Image (cartoon, rainbow, N blue to C red; front, side):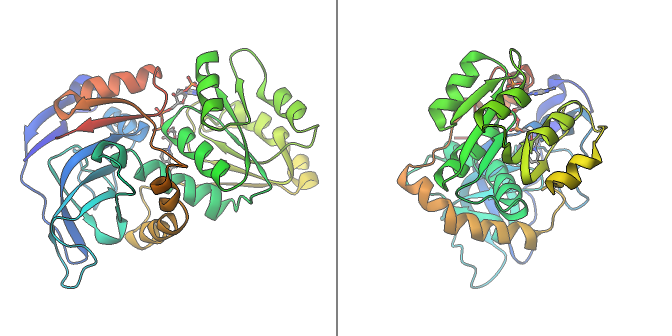
Length: 327
Ligand SMILES: NC(=O)c1ccc[n+]([C@@H]2O[C@H](COP(=O)([O-])OP(=O)(O)OC[C@H]3O[C@@H](n4cnc5c(N)ncnc54)[C@H](OP(=O)(O)O)[C@@H]3O)[C@@H](O)[C@H]2O)c1
């Protein structure tokens, strides 16, 4: 099969199209003929050599999400049949013509979505569900601040939290990006380049603060995140783009009874990921089928142009997801 290989750690040019054997599939796994693969920022970190895949995942083929057609199943009596269309969360190996994946990490393609649209969903929707709703327990009457509102994670978080009844505030790096987030359902988007998000949140919530912050920035944001939280607020850290070290005023944690947590999805096992799939299928897939939540795709590239897709992602000019097509 054709696959995009990380030939060595480095810039986008190290991504090269090569021939590889079709992957084996184990009991409880399916083999998927990939029609589209989503691109995520963690793929960029992996390409640079900063985010090694877990031992059981393909080591040099990036790609955490796909959509395609089931080619073979490893289990008799699987809920999947050859020829079914599915999208799936992977631990790696998505930028290729075939991928094997635990069957519990596959979901039916909701509604009439295309392969490209379906491939844009798993990594961000699993991450947001697991952090915002399972770990953080966001409730319908509560408020959520999402940093990086136009990121793949951001466009999923805005729509999921709004659809389930919460008020969503976001930060983004330009007026255009802010308008994009508000059109998607954010109650207010804060341009972090022109105003302090801490001051804006204070004003927007009459000084109360938000119930939860979903943060991918870290570093200098940490202190302002803590100040932006309401009593019993939760800070959920899912990345540290501006640094992993931070200073904390512990008295605020005590006075406001805050919870500081975070997680990474990729390293979790198939049982954990399959449990999230079940919850997404019950709570979010119907909203995708009805159109209340939609995939937000910025650009589609052919598989061979994976390097161009990474260049675009690193420019941060995109709003929403970048997808590779194999059709
Ligand atoms: N913990 C997990 O399990 C998990 C899973 C998936 C993704 N993630 C993380 O979530 C983040 C978003 O991933 P994604 O694929 O959705 O990314 P993405 O679509 O590439 O979006 C990232 C956005 O972040 C902003 N940004 C970029 N560099 C920044 C910097 N140095 N400081 C502040 N903001 C910056 C940019 O928007 P602006 O122009 O508005 O600044 C950019 O569009 C990544 O850091 C990724 O590693 C974590």
